[in-house]
Amino acid sequence: MELFTPDFGLVFWMFVSFAVLLFILYKWGWPVIIKGVESRADLIDKGVEYAQEAKEQLQNAKKESEKYVAEARKQQADMLREADRMKSQIIDEARVAAQQEAKKVMDAAKVAIAQERKEAELQFRNEVSSFALDIASKVVRNELADEKAQTRLVDTLLDEMEKQN
Amino acid sequence: MMKRIQILFCLVMVAIMAPFAIQAESDGHSGELSPKDIIFEHLGDGYGWEVPFDHHHRIPLPVILVGKDGFHCFMSSKVADGKKYVDGDKTFFIPKEGDYKGKVVQQLADGSVYRPWDISITKNVCELFIACLLVLWSVFAVARWHSREMYKAPRKIRGILEVLIVFIYDGVIKPTLGNRTAKFGPFLLTVFFFILYLNLLGLMVVFPGGANLTGNIAVTLVLSVFTFFATNIFGTKHYWKDIFWPDVPLWLKFPIPIMPIIELFGVFTKPAALTVRLFANMMGGHMIVIVLTLLIFIFAALGPVVTGATTVVSIIFSVFMLLIDVLVSFIQAYVFTMLSTLFIAFGTDPGHHEEKKEAAEIKQIEEATAA
Image (cartoon, rainbow over all chains, first blue to last red):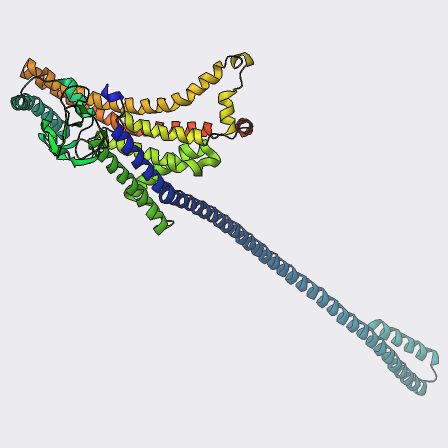
């Protein structure tokens, strides 16, 4: 059968043309393409890796910034609280100091008043006694006779004076 | 809806017109319709290239003969239609009967006829050159892109070509051949594109297609001979040991070498299977389409109604078959490449690493199941 017997001419040309085609493509065709495709695939892989890394870094940075913000906020709140606390403390302290000072002043005043009073009493007593002595001397001078009655009078006067004070 | 009406209209027109066309055709032809001759003419080779819709004119192609008295070169138009070409004392013609039917023969001075070595640029050879140029153009289109544009992605036709290249290279060649990819990859890629282009060109009716080359045993034979040489020239010790001293019980290989004989036989049946698979598939596809078309003419004798009906059915079926053949073109190119890859991989297997690979695979499966 003609269909099943290879024709010499076609075999010859087929062999020649395929060999030439193979030689050309083996030398200058396929290696270029394969190398190009592979280097491009590498580039794409690297690009994807880089993008992923960048994304991760960005996320990290975001997280970090959020952390910082939260920290700052916390610090701010702490500081505010601290200030508040210090304020009330200062006020308290001032109050206490004022009270103490006032008390001190009052005490001093009291002591002074007491002192003064004592001095006044003393003076008064002295004056009274001098008055008394004056009166007594007057009584003595005027009414030497009725000595007993005079003394009694003096005493009553003195007692009254004392009671008044 | 409009589309369906259009299609229906076309079919009806075909059914009505077909009988007239056949009538006109058979008026021009004298003699009976011979389906066998038509099929063989379409599947076979020719010294000229047919002009579409014209049975009488052919584009002449050079005829090159290596006879007993040296080279002879002339255009095929000189021996067309039974003409005799006389060049000095040499006469050439194409006999219509006998052993050399349809081939150019030389008539010697004493009247005896013999067939010289025929390396004419026939239709098939011409088609072969066209396919080679197409493959060259496609590959260099992509290669040029890669050397010029570097990292840009190719578009349009280059994109399609690159997808095909990567599909074959990364999908078939690389996983099978491993570290031998660089050595045999270019050959296998060339084989794939060459077969694919020839298959598709074979499906086209007019120029630049028209010749049924992958359905020709000479082409597939040469292709598988290349695979055969690649397998056996680069065959490793391991490969030859598997042939002459395979791992089978001793009585199977000594004293009567049953297995070695079978294995040695297998060395030749592998490329033979490659040859016949591609050849038979492509030839069968072409034959079915031709037969379906011929049915119209065979049934023409039964009257216009039958002819019209047959025409519609035949056309639908041949369009369907042609579409299937487009698929088959790709599948057969793929299968040829894949089997060549496998044969070369077997032949150049360095041995021992197979066990390692198996162990690695088992480990992988274990890991997968564990996960």
